[in-house]
Image 1: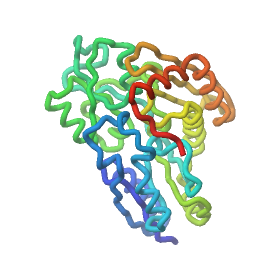
Image 2: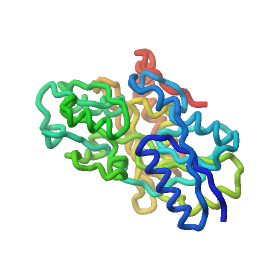
Image 3: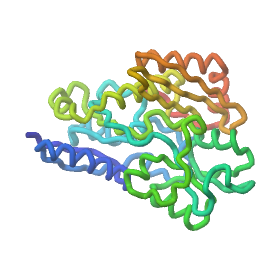
Image 4: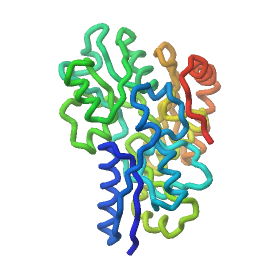
Length: 311
Protein backbone atom coordinates (compact mmCIF):
# COMPACT_ATOMS: atom_id res chain seq x y z
CA UNK A 1 0.00 0.00 0.00
CA UNK A 2 1.15 3.54 -0.72
CA UNK A 3 1.52 6.76 1.24
CA UNK A 4 -0.08 9.50 -0.86
CA UNK A 5 0.22 13.25 -0.40
CA UNK A 6 -2.79 15.24 -1.70
CA UNK A 7 -2.65 18.95 -2.57
CA UNK A 8 -5.80 21.04 -2.27
CA UNK A 9 -7.01 24.60 -1.91
CA UNK A 10 -8.17 25.51 1.58
CA UNK A 11 -11.77 26.51 0.92
CA UNK A 12 -14.51 24.53 2.59
CA UNK A 13 -15.60 22.97 -0.70
CA UNK A 14 -12.04 22.17 -1.82
CA UNK A 15 -11.38 20.48 1.52
CA UNK A 16 -14.60 18.47 1.25
CA UNK A 17 -13.44 17.28 -2.17
CA UNK A 18 -9.93 16.43 -0.93
CA UNK A 19 -11.30 14.55 2.10
CA UNK A 20 -13.75 12.69 -0.16
CA UNK A 21 -10.87 11.44 -2.33
CA UNK A 22 -8.78 10.73 0.81
CA UNK A 23 -11.56 8.54 2.22
CA UNK A 24 -11.82 6.57 -1.02
CA UNK A 25 -8.04 6.04 -1.07
CA UNK A 26 -7.93 4.99 2.59
CA UNK A 27 -10.70 2.48 1.88
CA UNK A 28 -8.23 0.92 -0.60
CA UNK A 29 -5.69 0.58 2.22
CA UNK A 30 -3.48 3.60 1.47
CA UNK A 31 -2.32 6.19 3.97
CA UNK A 32 -3.03 9.79 3.01
CA UNK A 33 -1.61 13.16 3.97
CA UNK A 34 -3.26 16.47 3.02
CA UNK A 35 -1.35 19.64 2.06
CA UNK A 36 -3.38 22.87 1.91
CA UNK A 37 -2.05 25.29 -0.70
CA UNK A 38 -3.18 28.90 -1.19
CA UNK A 39 -3.61 29.83 -4.86
CA UNK A 40 -3.67 33.17 -6.68
CA UNK A 41 -7.46 32.91 -7.03
CA UNK A 42 -7.80 32.52 -3.25
CA UNK A 43 -5.75 35.67 -2.64
CA UNK A 44 -7.77 37.88 -5.03
CA UNK A 45 -11.20 38.12 -3.45
CA UNK A 46 -12.37 41.63 -4.26
CA UNK A 47 -12.34 41.50 -8.08
CA UNK A 48 -14.74 39.69 -10.42
CA UNK A 49 -13.03 36.60 -11.83
CA UNK A 50 -13.60 37.71 -15.41
CA UNK A 51 -11.52 40.81 -14.72
CA UNK A 52 -8.55 38.93 -13.26
CA UNK A 53 -7.43 36.84 -16.21
CA UNK A 54 -4.63 34.94 -14.55
CA UNK A 55 -4.09 31.60 -16.28
CA UNK A 56 -4.57 28.71 -13.87
CA UNK A 57 -5.45 31.09 -11.03
CA UNK A 58 -6.78 28.21 -8.91
CA UNK A 59 -4.14 25.66 -9.96
CA UNK A 60 -0.71 27.27 -10.50
CA UNK A 61 0.66 26.99 -6.94
CA UNK A 62 -0.70 23.46 -6.59
CA UNK A 63 1.00 22.42 -9.83
CA UNK A 64 4.27 23.91 -8.54
CA UNK A 65 3.98 21.63 -5.49
CA UNK A 66 3.51 18.65 -7.86
CA UNK A 67 6.59 19.58 -9.90
CA UNK A 68 8.67 20.00 -6.74
CA UNK A 69 7.50 16.59 -5.51
CA UNK A 70 5.90 18.03 -2.37
CA UNK A 71 2.63 16.29 -3.24
CA UNK A 72 1.74 13.21 -5.32
CA UNK A 73 -1.68 14.26 -6.59
CA UNK A 74 -3.97 17.29 -6.65
CA UNK A 75 -7.75 17.34 -6.32
CA UNK A 76 -9.40 20.09 -8.39
CA UNK A 77 -12.86 21.12 -9.44
CA UNK A 78 -12.42 20.10 -13.07
CA UNK A 79 -13.84 23.41 -14.30
CA UNK A 80 -10.85 25.19 -12.67
CA UNK A 81 -8.28 23.21 -14.68
CA UNK A 82 -7.05 24.82 -17.94
CA UNK A 83 -8.22 22.84 -20.97
CA UNK A 84 -4.62 22.23 -22.02
CA UNK A 85 -2.39 21.15 -19.17
CA UNK A 86 1.32 21.92 -19.25
CA UNK A 87 3.36 18.92 -20.45
CA UNK A 88 4.44 18.21 -16.85
CA UNK A 89 0.95 17.05 -15.85
CA UNK A 90 -1.88 14.68 -16.68
CA UNK A 91 -5.40 14.05 -15.40
CA UNK A 92 -5.24 10.58 -13.87
CA UNK A 93 -8.93 10.38 -12.99
CA UNK A 94 -12.21 12.21 -13.48
CA UNK A 95 -14.68 11.18 -10.81
CA UNK A 96 -18.36 10.31 -11.17
CA UNK A 97 -20.15 13.59 -11.68
CA UNK A 98 -22.41 15.45 -9.28
CA UNK A 99 -25.33 17.38 -10.78
CA UNK A 100 -23.59 19.77 -13.23
CA UNK A 101 -26.46 22.29 -13.36
CA UNK A 102 -26.67 25.75 -11.81
CA UNK A 103 -29.19 26.56 -9.09
CA UNK A 104 -31.18 29.65 -8.17
CA UNK A 105 -30.90 30.46 -4.46
CA UNK A 106 -33.11 32.99 -2.70
CA UNK A 107 -34.64 33.71 0.70
CA UNK A 108 -37.86 35.25 -0.66
CA UNK A 109 -38.35 34.20 -4.29
CA UNK A 110 -39.21 30.82 -5.78
CA UNK A 111 -37.63 31.18 -9.23
CA UNK A 112 -35.91 33.49 -11.71
CA UNK A 113 -39.35 34.30 -13.15
CA UNK A 114 -40.68 35.26 -9.70
CA UNK A 115 -38.04 37.94 -9.08
CA UNK A 116 -39.39 41.50 -9.06
CA UNK A 117 -38.30 44.02 -11.68
CA UNK A 118 -34.76 45.35 -11.14
CA UNK A 119 -33.99 42.66 -8.55
CA UNK A 120 -30.36 42.35 -7.41
CA UNK A 121 -28.73 39.04 -8.38
CA UNK A 122 -25.22 38.00 -7.40
CA UNK A 123 -22.81 36.14 -9.68
CA UNK A 124 -19.27 36.76 -10.88
CA UNK A 125 -19.71 34.45 -13.87
CA UNK A 126 -20.13 36.09 -17.29
CA UNK A 127 -21.69 32.83 -18.49
CA UNK A 128 -24.41 32.98 -15.82
CA UNK A 129 -24.84 36.74 -16.22
CA UNK A 130 -25.39 36.47 -19.98
CA UNK A 131 -28.01 33.75 -19.67
CA UNK A 132 -29.83 35.54 -16.84
CA UNK A 133 -29.94 38.77 -18.84
CA UNK A 134 -31.26 36.91 -21.89
CA UNK A 135 -34.39 35.86 -20.02
CA UNK A 136 -34.62 38.81 -17.59
CA UNK A 137 -32.89 41.89 -19.07
CA UNK A 138 -34.26 44.04 -16.23
CA UNK A 139 -32.21 42.27 -13.53
CA UNK A 140 -29.29 44.02 -11.88
CA UNK A 141 -26.29 41.68 -11.81
CA UNK A 142 -23.65 42.29 -9.14
CA UNK A 143 -20.26 40.62 -8.54
CA UNK A 144 -20.25 37.83 -5.97
CA UNK A 145 -16.97 36.33 -4.72
CA UNK A 146 -15.99 34.30 -1.68
CA UNK A 147 -16.54 30.74 -0.56
CA UNK A 148 -19.97 29.11 -0.45
CA UNK A 149 -20.65 30.17 3.16
CA UNK A 150 -19.73 33.78 2.42
CA UNK A 151 -22.00 33.87 -0.62
CA UNK A 152 -24.94 32.35 1.24
CA UNK A 153 -24.41 34.74 4.15
CA UNK A 154 -24.54 37.73 1.78
CA UNK A 155 -27.81 36.37 0.38
CA UNK A 156 -29.34 35.82 3.83
CA UNK A 157 -28.32 39.31 4.98
CA UNK A 158 -30.35 40.84 2.15
CA UNK A 159 -27.42 42.06 0.05
CA UNK A 160 -28.93 40.18 -2.90
CA UNK A 161 -32.44 39.09 -3.81
CA UNK A 162 -30.96 35.92 -5.32
CA UNK A 163 -27.65 34.34 -6.20
CA UNK A 164 -26.70 31.67 -8.74
CA UNK A 165 -24.41 28.83 -7.65
CA UNK A 166 -23.41 25.37 -8.87
CA UNK A 167 -25.66 22.58 -7.62
CA UNK A 168 -22.65 20.32 -7.09
CA UNK A 169 -20.96 22.43 -4.42
CA UNK A 170 -24.13 22.94 -2.40
CA UNK A 171 -25.03 19.24 -2.62
CA UNK A 172 -21.54 18.19 -1.51
CA UNK A 173 -21.57 20.54 1.47
CA UNK A 174 -25.17 19.73 2.40
CA UNK A 175 -26.11 23.43 2.12
CA UNK A 176 -29.21 23.10 -0.01
CA UNK A 177 -31.72 24.97 2.19
CA UNK A 178 -31.85 28.09 -0.01
CA UNK A 179 -32.04 26.30 -3.37
CA UNK A 180 -35.36 27.32 -4.89
CA UNK A 181 -34.86 26.18 -8.48
CA UNK A 182 -32.52 23.79 -10.28
CA UNK A 183 -32.10 25.68 -13.54
CA UNK A 184 -32.57 23.45 -16.63
CA UNK A 185 -29.45 23.20 -18.80
CA UNK A 186 -31.51 24.53 -21.77
CA UNK A 187 -32.09 27.76 -19.80
CA UNK A 188 -28.64 28.06 -18.24
CA UNK A 189 -25.95 25.92 -19.86
CA UNK A 190 -23.37 25.00 -17.19
CA UNK A 191 -19.62 25.55 -17.30
CA UNK A 192 -17.47 22.89 -18.99
CA UNK A 193 -16.56 20.25 -16.43
CA UNK A 194 -18.92 21.55 -13.74
CA UNK A 195 -19.74 18.93 -11.10
CA UNK A 196 -16.71 16.70 -11.80
CA UNK A 197 -13.44 16.42 -9.89
CA UNK A 198 -10.16 16.15 -11.79
CA UNK A 199 -7.26 14.31 -10.12
CA UNK A 200 -3.99 15.71 -11.46
CA UNK A 201 -0.60 13.98 -11.23
CA UNK A 202 2.88 14.38 -12.69
CA UNK A 203 3.06 13.30 -16.33
CA UNK A 204 4.33 9.75 -16.57
CA UNK A 205 3.83 8.86 -12.88
CA UNK A 206 2.59 5.39 -13.77
CA UNK A 207 2.50 4.08 -10.19
CA UNK A 208 0.20 6.86 -8.93
CA UNK A 209 -1.93 6.68 -12.08
CA UNK A 210 -2.55 2.99 -11.47
CA UNK A 211 -3.47 3.60 -7.82
CA UNK A 212 -6.03 6.20 -8.91
CA UNK A 213 -7.52 4.26 -11.84
CA UNK A 214 -10.48 3.06 -9.75
CA UNK A 215 -11.63 6.69 -9.35
CA UNK A 216 -11.94 7.30 -13.10
CA UNK A 217 -15.57 7.28 -14.26
CA UNK A 218 -15.99 6.45 -17.95
CA UNK A 219 -19.14 8.56 -18.50
CA UNK A 220 -17.69 11.57 -16.67
CA UNK A 221 -14.43 11.22 -18.60
CA UNK A 222 -16.25 11.15 -21.97
CA UNK A 223 -18.68 14.00 -21.29
CA UNK A 224 -16.18 16.37 -19.68
CA UNK A 225 -13.54 15.63 -22.35
CA UNK A 226 -16.12 16.67 -24.93
CA UNK A 227 -16.99 19.87 -23.03
CA UNK A 228 -13.33 20.77 -22.53
CA UNK A 229 -12.58 20.15 -26.21
CA UNK A 230 -15.30 22.65 -27.09
CA UNK A 231 -13.90 25.20 -24.61
CA UNK A 232 -10.41 24.70 -25.97
CA UNK A 233 -11.63 25.17 -29.55
CA UNK A 234 -13.19 28.49 -28.52
CA UNK A 235 -9.97 29.50 -26.78
CA UNK A 236 -11.68 30.22 -23.48
CA UNK A 237 -11.10 29.62 -19.81
CA UNK A 238 -13.77 29.13 -17.17
CA UNK A 239 -14.42 32.90 -16.88
CA UNK A 240 -15.68 33.40 -20.46
CA UNK A 241 -19.39 33.48 -21.46
CA UNK A 242 -19.20 29.94 -22.86
CA UNK A 243 -21.34 27.04 -21.68
CA UNK A 244 -20.98 23.32 -22.42
CA UNK A 245 -23.11 20.43 -21.21
CA UNK A 246 -22.65 16.89 -22.51
CA UNK A 247 -24.64 13.79 -21.58
CA UNK A 248 -24.38 10.13 -22.51
CA UNK A 249 -27.47 8.97 -24.40
CA UNK A 250 -27.67 5.38 -25.65
CA UNK A 251 -23.89 5.06 -25.83
CA UNK A 252 -23.45 8.34 -27.69
CA UNK A 253 -22.64 11.85 -26.48
CA UNK A 254 -25.11 14.71 -26.77
CA UNK A 255 -23.44 18.13 -26.47
CA UNK A 256 -25.31 21.39 -25.85
CA UNK A 257 -23.14 24.49 -25.99
CA UNK A 258 -23.42 28.25 -26.08
CA UNK A 259 -21.46 31.45 -26.62
CA UNK A 260 -23.05 34.67 -25.42
CA UNK A 261 -22.55 38.39 -25.13
CA UNK A 262 -22.19 39.25 -21.42
CA UNK A 263 -25.24 41.52 -21.58
CA UNK A 264 -27.39 38.66 -22.90
CA UNK A 265 -28.38 40.49 -26.10
CA UNK A 266 -26.95 37.72 -28.26
CA UNK A 267 -26.94 34.04 -27.34
CA UNK A 268 -25.69 31.38 -29.75
CA UNK A 269 -26.67 27.81 -28.94
CA UNK A 270 -25.63 24.65 -30.75
CA UNK A 271 -26.52 20.98 -30.10
CA UNK A 272 -25.08 17.88 -31.71
CA UNK A 273 -24.59 14.18 -31.10
CA UNK A 274 -21.49 12.10 -31.74
CA UNK A 275 -19.34 9.17 -30.72
CA UNK A 276 -15.90 10.73 -30.34
CA UNK A 277 -15.81 13.29 -27.48
CA UNK A 278 -12.94 15.42 -28.80
CA UNK A 279 -14.19 15.43 -32.38
CA UNK A 280 -17.70 16.37 -31.25
CA UNK A 281 -16.42 19.20 -29.03
CA UNK A 282 -14.25 20.54 -31.86
CA UNK A 283 -17.07 20.37 -34.42
CA UNK A 284 -19.57 22.18 -32.21
CA UNK A 285 -16.93 24.78 -31.29
CA UNK A 286 -16.14 25.33 -34.97
CA UNK A 287 -19.83 25.78 -35.79
CA UNK A 288 -20.29 28.32 -32.98
CA UNK A 289 -17.26 30.31 -34.13
CA UNK A 290 -18.57 30.34 -37.69
CA UNK A 291 -22.06 31.42 -36.61
CA UNK A 292 -20.72 34.53 -34.86
CA UNK A 293 -19.01 33.23 -31.75
CA UNK A 294 -15.67 34.55 -32.94
CA UNK A 295 -17.03 38.11 -33.09
CA UNK A 296 -18.69 37.79 -29.68
CA UNK A 297 -15.49 36.54 -28.03
CA UNK A 298 -13.39 39.24 -29.72
CA UNK A 299 -15.82 41.78 -28.30
CA UNK A 300 -15.53 40.26 -24.80
CA UNK A 301 -11.74 40.54 -24.93
CA UNK A 302 -12.01 44.09 -26.30
CA UNK A 303 -14.27 45.18 -23.43
CA UNK A 304 -11.47 44.41 -21.01
CA UNK A 305 -12.80 41.14 -19.66
CA UNK A 306 -9.49 39.35 -19.23
CA UNK A 307 -9.56 35.80 -20.49
CA UNK A 308 -7.09 33.21 -19.18
CA UNK A 309 -4.92 32.25 -22.15
CA UNK A 310 -4.25 28.60 -22.77
CA UNK A 311 -0.63 27.40 -22.42
